[in-house]
Image (cartoon, rainbow, N blue to C red; front, side):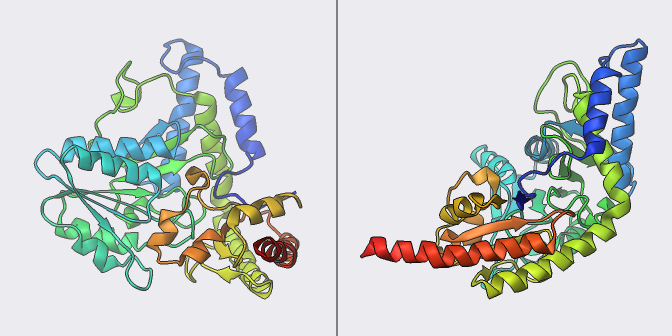
Length: 381
């Protein structure tokens, strides 16, 4: 099996799996309980919060554990708007965001907020100046991703957010860092972010756990209400096994970030060369995340190519896993043609991806071009 869909989800690493089992079988107390088992469970949560905060640079902050990045982004957007949007009713995002950001932003628009969506320019770029100029004195919140999940495009968040905070210190900044965390050298202070969304299952932890990093002093209102856990921001009994597994995955990845990034760059360059030779069109831009490559095989629909490769036990994606086969609005926003969009697949690598994996993928592309295009022409006749 050749798995090249790591931007959708990753295989749980041994360290995370062992951590989850340990928490489930040895430290199984309710972290709100006052007895020893409860206190030990609470210690695992505290360790996990500290681990994730340290991985983001150690800036003083609160880490709220959630069910995943979708909940984290919803909590950030609604929670920040509730606190900082009482007098300022303008919000800003980009056209290439994940649905977990675009959805809440559109919902706020329905509630009376003025929504500005920054589109890529004629070159398919989201520029620093475009983001900054979209903000004014009436803006309460800007939410923009660091790494686009479909193309690997890196938005100029560090420079843009820094300028926005200098011009409008009261404007809150939220960043979806799901595809960048533990892959790029991200530091919260350099991002100038007030809130950062993270996901466990993108970095070899189990599904069902994420985190919202909140800068110290920033107020986020809860969107659910109950027992008051996690300072009342996200009430409900915490899933200690998932949280601890998330933290152990982070702990395992931190020392190897540079090594893994170098490997990803090497594989990306090799894949671009081999897939281009096999007739593919490379959609991802240079300078993006090396972990994600968007490619098209003209005349072959992406879903058809995906299943053709699956028969050879090569697993890629036809886009964002959250789109479930719908035409990508993100690729449209990046100004790709309909023909290219319809034939686009996403390749997302891991530290275990090898050149031989890419060779097999390239051969799969060649076979697809020979058989599927020919079959398509026969059917049209």
